Image (tube, rainbow, N blue to C red; front, top):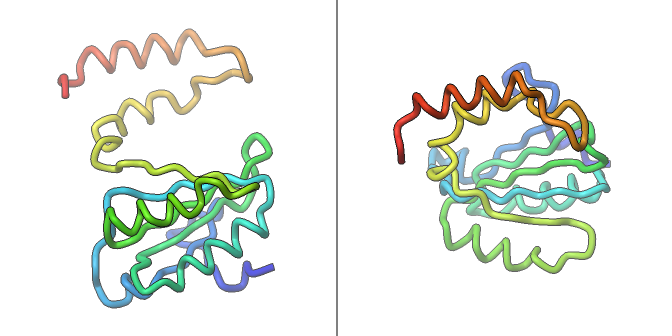
Length: 144
């Protein structure tokens, strides 16, 4: 297990984190982040550790506990090109699943995302109260 290579940050014990060399040099990360899921925590941690050692890596993290049987991981690289190339490498991995999230796009919906925090009562049921509150919030948000 490679957990010793990662640390808890900002008092949030839900994720183990590690800086990449680019962060140490004061560079910034691309707004395209790699989002990984796997049912194998140790496998995910090993791959994120390897990615964190790339010269263009800014930051990686992974969840300590599974959600729906899946562990979540994130990798922030310095360029969109690097994020796309790594995504292409992992697209066909047999047990790690990788997508790209555009943080510039998602940022517009962060407030709405927070409103939906307790939306799912179970796998199939949405809370009517949360839906109503989110509907009211959507009406107040500006069109983007």
